[in-house]
Amino acid sequence: MTEQGKGKGFDTRAVRGGQVRTAEQEQSEPLFLSSSFTFDSAAQAAARFAGEEPGNIYSRFTNPTVRTFEQRLAGLEGGQACVATSSGMAAINAMCMALLRSGDHVICSRGVFGTTTSLLTKVLPKFGVHATFVGPTDYAGWQEAMRPETRLLFLETPSNPLTEVADIAWLAGLAHEHDALLVVDNCFCTPALQRPLELGADLIIHSATKYLDGQGRCVGGAVVGDDKRVGEEIFGMLRTAGPSMSPFNAWVFSKGLETLRLRMRAHSENAQALAEWLQEHPRVTRVNYPGLPGHAQHELARRQQDGFGGILSFEVDGGRAGAWAVVDGTEMISITANLGDVKSTITHPASTTHGRISQEERDASGITEGLLRISVGLEDVEDLQADLDRALAAG
Ligand SMILES: *Cc1c(COP(=O)(O)O)cnc(C)c1O
Image (tube, rainbow, N blue to C red):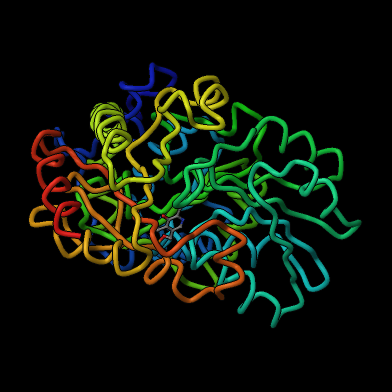
C-alpha cells in the first residue's frame, strides 16, 4: 500500500497526502473507529510494546485515521512530523509540558488567543514556568524580554483580534541567537496562506477547530515540526498525558484539508470586500485588516502571506453599549466566538474571548470596548453588508 500525494504540489498533498489504501481499495479515507488493535501473537504484542516493531497498539498512542490527518497536515506545513491533539489548547499545553521545565521562561505576544494567555499566566506558573508578554510588533520589547532562561517565543500572526502582523523570520532569528524556539500558532492563516517553518519558525500550533475543519463541526488541534521534538518528545508526552484526537474528528479534519486552499482564498476575498466597505461606514471609526493598504503591516503581510485571511475587526462609536447593539442588531451573522467557519460569526472580544483577562491586560492589548471581530464566512458579501448595515443603523 503506497502513501499518496507525497512530494507533490500543495493542492495534491491537500487532497491525497497521508492516505494509505487498505485491501478494500476504498476511494475515500477510511474511518478506523477502534480503540485498540490486535496482535498475531504474544511475541508480536511484546515487540510492539517494546517499540521494536512499528504498528498500532491503542488509539491513545496511534490510530490510522489520525495518522492520515497528521501526515496530510505535516505535508502542507512542510514539517517532518505532526501530532494531533484533542483541541488547540491541548496542542499548546502538550508542547509546553514536553519542552519546558520548572525555571524556564517564555515570551509571548500580547495578541494571542485569550485562553493561551490564561494558560501562561494561571496554569504554567504553578509548575515554575513564567511568561513575559510583549506587543507582537514591539521588536525592542521582544529583545528586552530575553533572559538566559528563555526557552520559547510564542506568536500568533496575524494577531487576534487586531490583525497585527509580526515578522516571523526576524523573530526566528532572535530566538535562535538565544538558543530558544519560535512557536507560531498558524490558526488564522493556515498553511494555505502562510508557512512559518519555511520562514525559520521551529514549531507550528493549530486549532483544527477553526479553518482546518472549516465548517464548525469538531474540536481538535495539532503540533507540527521536526522528528525529535514533535515525533518523539511531544508525541511521548501526549501518549502519556492523554489528550489525543478522536479518529472521527481526524477524519473530518482530513476531509477539511482537501478544500483548505479554495476556502482560504474565498474567505480572503470576502473579508477584503467587507473591510473596504466597513471603512467607508460613518459609524465605524477603525478597521483592522491586513489587506487594507492603510494597515500598519500591509507590506509585510504581502511578503509573508499568500493572502490576507478571513478575520477582521473594527471599532464602532458608543463603547460597549454601541458594540453590543451592533451584535444584537445582526439577523444573519452568527453570534458566536468561534471562527474559521463557512458561516460568518461576530463577537465582542472585550466581553467574551478576552473577558477573563484583566482590564489592564486588555488595555495593553488594544482590546477596546467598541471593538468587534468578524470571522468572514462564505455567504454572498452583499448579504453580509446588508446585515451589518442594518445592525449599524440600529446601534
Ligand atoms: C481557538 C484557538 C485556539 C484554541 O483552540 P481550541 O481548539 O479551541 O482548543 C488557539 N489559538 C487560536 C489562534 C485560536 O483561535
